[in-house]
Amino acid sequence: MELDLVEITGLFEEIRRFYSYVSDESRYMRFLAAVRDPASVYKHLWSCGGRSFLVLEGRRPVAIVDVTPCGEEAEAGIVVADALQGRGYGTRIAEIFASLLPRLGFWRVKAEIYRENIKALALAKRMGAEIDCSTIVCVVRLQLATRSRAQGPLLAVI
Ligand SMILES: CC(C)(COP(=O)(O)OP(=O)(O)OC[C@H]1O[C@@H](n2cnc3c(N)ncnc32)[C@H](O)[C@@H]1OP(=O)(O)O)[C@@H](O)C(=O)NCCC(=O)NCCS
Image 1 (cartoon, rainbow, N blue to C red):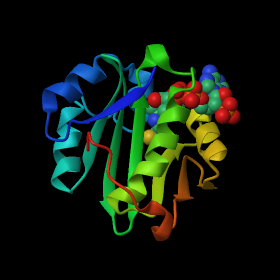
Image 2 (image 1 turned 135 degrees about the vertical axis):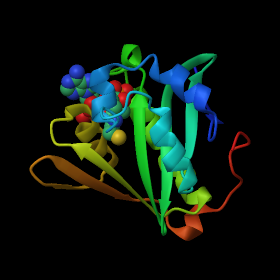
Image 3 (image 1 turned 120 degrees about the horizontal axis):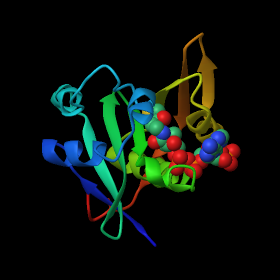
């Protein structure tokens, strides 16, 4: 089935609803372990120009992807609902965003990933990202399409 994107920037209840499908382990990997209510972090993220997208397969929520601008680079974070992890959704979603982000004006994407996060690092490697690890966190960066290749309409849903 196709994956659809719906922007949920500013919709705190959508964030809370989705994170009810997300385990403590996945919240930790998404750097959200320190807060009881993830929506409190989104308040800050959105006030800095960040945008959040709910990924749906039919009516089923699959993932949230957050994109925060940092110059021409976007900082991205993703969490896939625990019951659906390890089935290729993260990889499909990363591919969708790699082609979407240049149309939103971003030419590079960056993500921070805990060194122990095997799935996220495998995903970054598959996408061809540069990976730079310190003791605890790896910073991954991926060069996206060049400006000339990034022409074209935005997805209708954005
Ligand atoms: C990281 C995450 C987004 C990956 O999405 P996913 O749908 O689970 O991943 P996929 O099924 O597409 O698999 C991605 C890679 O992980 C590997 N993988 C999947 N499950 C695995 C497991 N249990 N153990 C080891 N590797 C695994 C896959 O083989 C694939 O690697 P490959 O391309 O070399 O084959 C998802 O697991 C997640 O939301 N985790 C919690 C939040 C998080 O870590 N976010 C990233 C930091 S912002």
